[in-house]
Image (cartoon, rainbow, N blue to C red; front, side, top):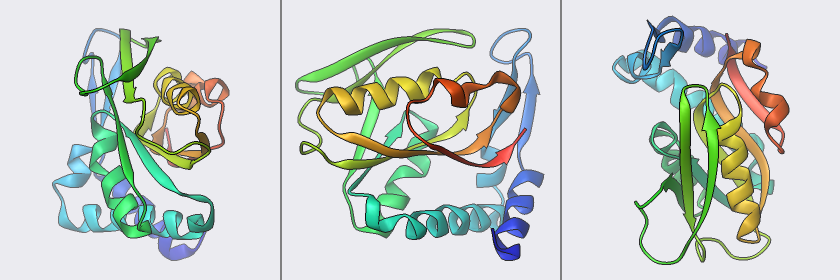
Length: 180
């Protein structure tokens, strides 16, 4: 990692916000919106993401992102790489024929869906989200991409909560910039 990227990561880290007991007691919610609301931090984050994307460009044929904060970064990366963007959404939010996967979260359960015809077979995908906690959401995204006949080259998150060991649940390599 270059010193320029390392310094940008520290700028981003400074602007992360934490909210204890949200969305329920015992959970510390890590919020990326403090970064988004600061011009310098937002620009630093964009540079970090696009540098990573450029370094892996030869392997990425599409970008998928997880609802909802992954949607802040996935389209930006896809546009930069000149590849399609495909959203993975919560149940009932996508039209047409979908594939679904239900999973457990740190604070409940959920179901994600992807449109069945969203990607061509064997497309190499970068999967994007803001945060890796238990790994259940990224795992669900990877499973959905695989179910429709494509493959996850790697997953990219900004924040990783290392104590939760979510990386071990994700069936793709995981890149993270800030480990908490």
